[in-house]
Image (cartoon, rainbow, N blue to C red; front, side, top):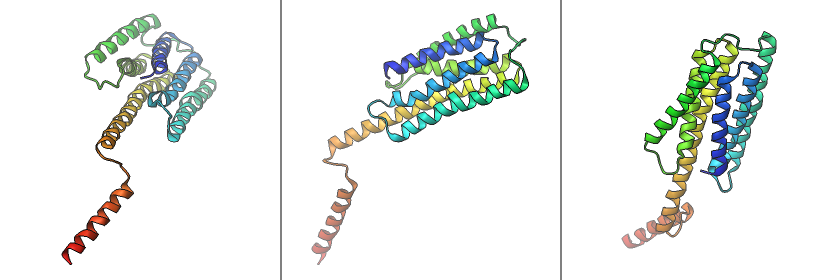
Length: 209
């Protein structure tokens, strides 16, 4: 886990707390847009070394969708509805912040007790759990349809963190497996293995004749 990935996780925690304390829909949309753009960088940071071309494409697509396209659509919806604030939420903003801090502590408490592969950062797990919980809390504590849509995006961001970590972990495991195979065998070239099979078949035929 790189240093910059940890920085992104800390920023996401701060952005989530900002969402809990903000009543202005435009501000909430900007916070979610920043969060989405930051998450789009995660695949590049978690893969390490020289990321593959498809990783760049995936990261760019995530940034465009999460950080630009969806926020623009939500801003358009705000202007069309002419509603710019979440005026009377089911749970007030001060109480929401207190609950947010409690959710953050619970997330760290859960991640500290999970048995994780050594490659997975507990900060990443805590951030993913916290983001999902914040999204769920916003769904049940806010009234406006636009805020509800933002809440689902926040929850999806937490799932995205889990998914990105899973892909990075799978890539890491595959690298380890290939490394050990390469140590045990002289090569892993399938063409040469096929040639060996053909040679063995020819030799077997000669022995029978």
